[in-house]
Amino acid sequence: MSRKITLDETIEVARPLHEVFAYVSEFSRIEQWDPAVARGTRLTPGAPGLGSEYRIDMKAGFSLHYRVVEWEAERRMLMTVDSRLFTAREEILFSATARGTRLRYIATFDFPAPLAAMSRTFPSVMDRVGKSTMEGLQRALEDNFEPPRESSATALADRLLLPGLCRFTRLGYRAARKRWKPVSAWLGGRHALVTGATSGIGFAAARELAALGARVTIVGRDPAKTEHAARAIRASTGNLQVAFDIADLSLMADVNALADRLLATGEPLDILVNNAGALFNPRQLTAEGLEKSFALLLLSPWLLTERLHPLLARAGSARVVNVLSGGMYSQRIDVDDLQSRNGRYSGSAAYARAKRGLMILTEEWAEKWRDDGIVVNAMHPGWADTPGVESALPAFYRSTRAALRSPEEGADTIVWLGAATEAGKVSGKFWLDREQHPSHVFRHTRETPEDRRRLLEALGGYLTSTRTARRSRRQA
Picture 1 (cartoon, rainbow, N blue to C red):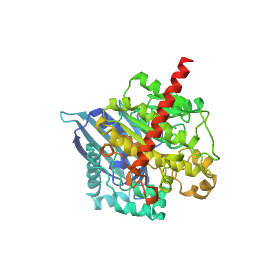
Picture 2: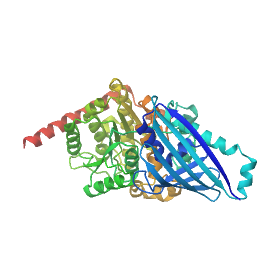
Picture 3: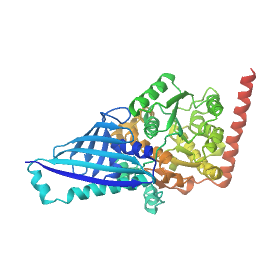
Picture 4: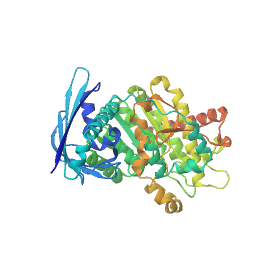
C-alpha cells in the first residue's frame, strides 16, 4: 500500500516578480538551492515552459525526471516527478507583494511499499527536506553574498605547480563548484558582447548569458559560422535577442569598424567578454603586417575595449571580462619585442606573453575606470575540450583529453564574472573557478612600473596609427 506525504512551504523575498520567476522556472538551477541535488539538466530546448523536462541527479545516487504539465507565466508552474523511489506532483505559486515576491511550494509525494513503511518510521525527514530546500531558495534569491577572498592556500598551490595544474582539469572544476554560491542575477535589459563566440568557451558563455536574459551580440570572423551560432543560442535558450556581428579581430581595421558600428548605436554596453583567441605556429603576419598573436590576443582587445569605453561608462555598472591562460604564469612582458621578432619563435610563448600583457591591462583598466563604475577582471577557463585546443595543441589534447573540462565548465567563471552580484564588488583580479588566484607565481615574470608605462605608451601608438589609417581609407 502506498503512502502520500504533502509539503507546503512559503517564503517571501525582496525581488521583483519577473526576476524571481525567471530564476526559479529554469528548474535545472535547483542544484543552486537544494542541498540534496548534485546536478540539474534541462532535457528540452527553448525557453522554460509547458512541456519542459529536466533530469535532476540527487547526491544520494538516484535521479528524478521532472516534466512541466501546467504553466502560467509569473503565476504558477506544476510539475510531475518520476523516479524509481517515488512519484510526485510539485506546484510553485508566485505572487507579487508590497515587499517583493511570495513563493508557495506545494508537493505531494507518493511512496510505494515498502518505502511507504519507511516513510512512516521517519515522518519528519521529508518535512526537513522541504524546509531546507526553501531556505536555500530564499538565500539564493536574497543574493547577498560576499565575493571570495584571496587564499594563501590557493596561491601556494599555484606556486607549487602540480597542485595548481590539477586545478585546471575537470577534477579541479568539480572540487571548486562544491563551494560556490547561487547566481540568481537576472540580466534582462542588459547588453553583452562576446568575441570569439562561434564555438568552444565563447559560445558556451554567450549561450549562458542569453539564458540569464541578456541581449547578446556575438562576434566571429566567419559569417556562416557566426550566424549559425546565433541561431543555435536562440533555439537552445528561447532568447530571441541574440544578434551577431562579423569582424576578423586580428585586423585593426575590422576592430575599428566593429567599434564604429557599436558606438553609432549609442547603446550602453553592460558586459564585454574579450575571448577571441588562437595559437599560431609558425610565426605569422596579418594583412596589416602585425604578428598574429600580438594582434589578436593583446592589441585587439586593448583597442576594442578602449574604444568602447564610452558605452561601458554609459551602462553605469559595466563588467569587462578578459579571458587569459595559465600559460601567462611562465612569461614576462617584453615591451621591446611585443611582436616576437627576436630569437626563435614559439607560438605558445607568444600566446602566453600576450595574455600576460592583457593581465596588466586588466589591472590598469580596473584602476583607471573605477569611478566610471566599470569592473574589469580576468579569468582562466582551465583546460577545456574545445576545437581551438584540439587544432593548436594536438599532442597536449591527446594526452590530457580524459581530464579536460567541457566548454560549459570552462566558461562558467566568465558568466559568473559578468552576472553574479558579488563579482561586481571586486575589480582587477585574476580568477579560476570563481576563486581569486595570484597574477604572478614567479618573481622573474613580474613587470616594473616602467614596463607598464611603456606598454601603455606602445599600445597608444597603435591607437593613433589605426585612426590615421581609418581616416585615409575613408578619404580614399
